[in-house]
Every structure is written in structure tokens, then in C-alpha cells.
Image (cartoon, rainbow over all chains, first blue to last red; front, side, top):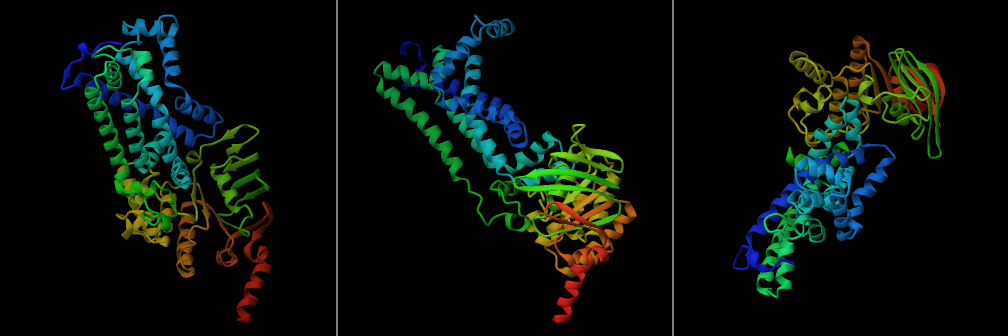
Amino acid sequence: MASTDSIDSIAGMDWQALALTLKLAATTTAILFCIAVPLAAWIVLSRSRLRAVAEALTALPLVLPPTVLGFYLLVLLGPRTPVGRSITLLLGHPLAFSFAGLVVGSVIYSFPFAVQPLIAGFSAIDSSLIDAAQLLGAGPARIVRTVLIPLAGRSLLTAAVLSFLHTLGEFGVVLMLGGDIPGATRTLSIVLFNQVENFDYASANRTAAVLLILCAAALTAIYARPRPTETGGNRSRTGNGSAETDEGIRHA
Amino acid sequence: MLDLNLKAHRGSFHLNVQCSLAAPWTVVFGPSGAGKSTLLRLIAGLEKPDAGSVILDGETLANTNLRIHKHPGKRGVGLVAQRSALFPHLKVASNITYGLRNVDSPTYADRLKVVLDLVNAAHLVDRLPAALSGGEAQRVSLARALAPMPRLLLLDEPLSALDAAARDQVLSRLQEWLAEQNIQAILVTHDAADALATSAEVATIHEGKLTALGPAREVLAAERARLLSRLTDS
């Protein structure tokens, strides 16, 4: 493990690592959204038997030890596999031990935290609205854009915040796949590990406090949002009785 | 002309319907749980039959042998259910025009005006569904299904939230307009009075099977007698 000498430290805080961690979390969340929204919509709208397989695969990172995931990704993206060699050829450098590699690992590791809230949110939308959209000629993409996304605002926010926070706190996958390269793969959780290893508890305390405050503030922002109530919205009048219905009205 | 040959199993319930519906306005009458709504959902393409076919004006919409199952939005079929299912985040005007795609601006505006006038809902155009009463929401839902000018309109007790007088008024105007536009309609109801109120062909359905098909006065003679005796008794 690298020593604290290489850390661009101001009052024990590694600002470079903080910036890299935030960049990693933001990039991962943006990529996850592009993949998770259509996948969750497909799982909810499709009648395919492959839905169960897709749901199981997306939930796998929840139960797998991060080091196992990191190890397989390291092998897959390394020079011994055709995938790894193709990526190296394409990018000019291997994905392992690079920021791009960290993003790939983070996307896979945080996948369930983006997909599960979206599946829950989309599933809560009254199926009669989806039937109505289909009968009026809407295809899957239009249903997602005009019905699911506007009515699942709370779930979209939850998915975004959980993906972001989960990436912030990643350690196992980051260490296995990215190592500890300052400015490239050293995130706050690695810095914290280094600080503890070097018995620099004062700095470790500051680093841990930053992560704690970031996570607590973001979660508080989610829970502080008013929840849809049983009597709210048009539930009683039109029978569109989904928890997300009222969310849609607020956004309108 | 709608030709149906449908078999569907839903748990212990079996639907088995073979018939040709040629009248411009057909009422499917049966008790709750007889399979009326399932029948409409199969015709609309929201559910797949286990076996059989749906043919509308000679065009095959579904055929299990040929593995044909047209997307609900490509069948030219409109469905208005008891639950209005209006998009809660869209205003009435946007709800009604949701199904209008690839039409020019004048047609768009004209179609909106025509269907709003037909269901007497022009004053609701800027409201969100949350601000509508149950009856208003059902009328807007009817207008939304009519706007794309379907070839076949399926009505699943669509005006149940209106009082009898208002319902009869809307149905009468609707029947007249559909005849002008040459749009075939099927109305399902469990209310014999509704079935008798329209000069329609009536099909009775019981436990998933069509038990009679013909003019209302003949098919519902027993129901008519029962209603009349109730009136005279009271």
C-alpha cells in the first residue's frame, strides 16, 4: 500500500482523492441511468421468461463479495482474455488500473442500487395506464418517456442517490481493479484505508467524516421529500392508485 | 364485421367464444365474472388467447395457429374501461391527443374539439385528471379513445359513474356519432336496463360462453319481463 507521502494533503484531507471519488460517482451514476432505466422498463413491461434471469443477474452484485467481482473483472479486462486485449487495442491502454476500469467496475457493482428502485417504482404504476398508452399506439420507448419516467420521479431520485452513494463508499472492487494510483484510481475509501494503516487517525477521522456527512446529507434529502399519501392525488377519482401517481402530479 | 373464435384459460375460468358480430352497436350482457372484460381485452390485444383468432373487417388481428398477435396500438381498436386510466400528469387536452400521431395541426385541433363536444367536456380541457369528478374522468377517457378514430370501439361499462339520465344522453349521442363515422362498437354491461335502452344487437355471456345473440327484445325477453314486473310491483 502506498504511503501518505504521495498524498496531496491539506490538513489531512486528500482533495485530489475527493475530487476523483466525486467524479467516479457522478460518471457511474450517469452511465447507470442510461442502462438501468431501459432495463428496468423492459423487466416491468416485458412478458418474456428471460425477465427472471435479468432480475437475478442485476441483483447478483448485492450478494457477491466485492473482491470476487473485482477479481473476475480484473481477469476479464486483463491481457489474457480476448475482451481485455480488444479493449487495450481500442483504448491504447488496459482498463485495469485506470479510471475507465474503475468506472466499469463501479457500474457493475452499483447496478442493483440503480435497477431495483426503478423496478419497484415502475411496477407501482397502475397497469391500466400502460394498457391505455399501448392502445393509443405508444411503443415501449414512448411509454417509458411519457408514462413511466414522469410517474416514477421519487424512484428515479432514489436510484440516482443510492447509485452515487454506493459508488462513493466502494472499496473492494476499487482496490482489486484500480489499485492505488494517485489521481487515477485512488478514491477516498482507499485514502482512509492508507491513513488507518499508517496510524494517522486524525486524518482518517476527517476522511471518514467527509464520507459520513456526504452520505447522511444525501439520504436525508431523499427521506425529507414528502411521501405520497393514500388520499392524495387522483387516486380515489380515477382509480390510478399507484404510489408514484401523486409524484407525477407534483412534477407536472 | 368482427369474427371471434377465442379460447382462454385464466385459473379455473375458461372463456370459449365463437361468433360474428356485424351490427354497428352490440351489447354484451352478462353477470359479473362472466368474462366480459376478458373478452374485450382479448379483442383489444392486451391479452393473448390460448387458441383462436380475432378478425376485424377481414384483417387478422390475432391468430394463434399463424402466431399473429398485432400490437394493441396497431389494431385500430379503442377501449374505454370502467376505470378511466387518465394519465395523471397530463392535462385533459394532452390526455385526449395522446393517441394522435402523424396528423396535421388543423386535424389535430379539429379532432380535439369534436370529441370534447361529443362528450360535453370542452370546459375541462385545461384541467388535470385530479381535478375531475368520476363522471367527468370517464367522459374524458371516452373522448381519448375516440380521438384516433378507431375502427372498433370497445366499451367496458364506461359511464358507470354517471347517473342514468346523463348516461343515456351520452350513449345516445355517441351511438349516433359512431354510426355517422362508420365505427363499430361493442358495449359490455351487467345492467339489463342498459342493454335494453339501446336498439342494439345483444349477446349474452355466461361463465365464459356466449349463450345467445340477437335483437335485444328477443334475447333479453326474460330480463325485460323481470324489470317490468319489478316496476309494476312498486
